[in-house]
Amino acid sequence: MPLFAKSEEILKRNQRSIPGGVVSTNRAVDPPIVFERGEGAWMWDADGNRYLDYHAAFGPYVLGHNDPYVNEAVLRVLQDKASLFGSGTTELEGKLAQLICDSVPFVEAVQLLNTGSEATYQAIRLARAATGRKHILKPQGGYHGWHNDVAFNLMTPLSQLGDRRVADEYPRIPISAGIPEEHQSLVHAINFNDLASVEAMCERYPVAALIVEPILQNIGVVHPREGYLQGLRALADKHGFVLIFDEVKTGFRHALGGYSTLSGVRPDLVVYGKAIANGFPISALAGKRSLMNLFVDADSTRRVLLAGTYNGHPVPVAAAIATMERLAEDDGEVYRHLDRLGKRVQAGMEEIFRSVGITAHIARQGSAFCPYFMDHLPKDWHDLAQHHDFDFDLRLRRELLDHEVYFFQLAVKQCSLSAAHTDADVDFTLESVKSALKSVLTVAS
Image 1 (tube, helix red, strand yellow):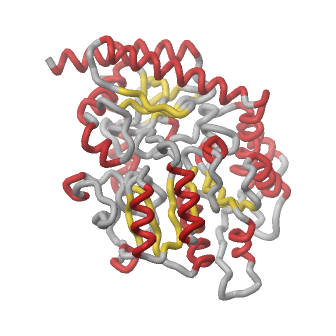
Image 2 (tube, rainbow, N blue to C red):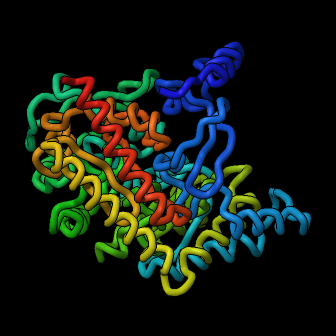
Image 3 (tube, one colour):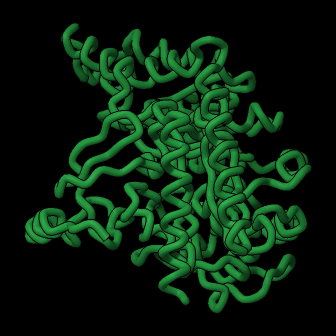
């Protein structure tokens, strides 16, 4: 494995003033690599090691690190003396909102925020205001932010969850301390791809909203089964809850209008982030005007507070506009490029595993992929937790560091291509996987 002496030194120094040494605890991984530079599809760490990047900072880099077109747009807005005025509106934020409306057929109105967690928080608040109800449904294995309404049941061990169930409720397993029991009682975890569990919860509780990643991309790439998303739409109409698609990871990575446009299913509200601005901090909440207008309702008892000093900051807004312009070029050539490379990675890795007798499947949607070491593609968290070889997954990811390829150092975490990746990069990746796998198998034997 590469040496990380300088990285370890920087981490220890930062730990003196930052608890754990990292500003997001999700970034605390072993080995503690400190990255210093990113360009295109590559990253370099403090010790001078380079890596072909498939982490993409949890997914934002759909165009690659420091994309020149996006960077030029940011520099231009700064040279024009744009600033955060904190009063009134700006042409830039209006332009971005209109681009989103034009890209997504069902979106009638947009609000801009800074993070995915902020946007999902506001979506749930809108749903509660609109319905007058309190209870929220979310799938096992889905991550929708750090706030009290959704910080539950992400990668919960089956020893805590128990067997798959429908009518009976799962234990609520918070992913954070400090969530009052009163909040916990309003959240109900269901299994992805299980419409019967949604029906059962709706018959038991007054449900304000169901929030779901249309593809579970916080536990790799778990696809909705045929009819699942359509079924959620039908149940939302039947029971009167607000259907929220959390497209923080899927939105604008798989299509200009997000995965909802590929599925043909219209949520009531949708949340975008990450890929929408190629690494700059911004999110968007969008959807039905009747719901979004609650932010400005004349009746103060129905009005939902929308506040945020940095909402619509000109730098990330300019980056988002430029990113969307790039994604729309040549009638979606970026997406065709990403899908073509994704197919090559998927086919190549599956052949490598097959050639040495490793049971594996590569789940993929466009540029996002994840290897699963099990005899079928998972349908939900229970299925994945029961059958996937987590230890082998992590050992392969760590061995890939020796071969200049960076998959995030945690099992079943999504890998992402960017438009900056090339066919030569894919060739390099497949050779690296082949060599890394040989090393892992040699050690195991």
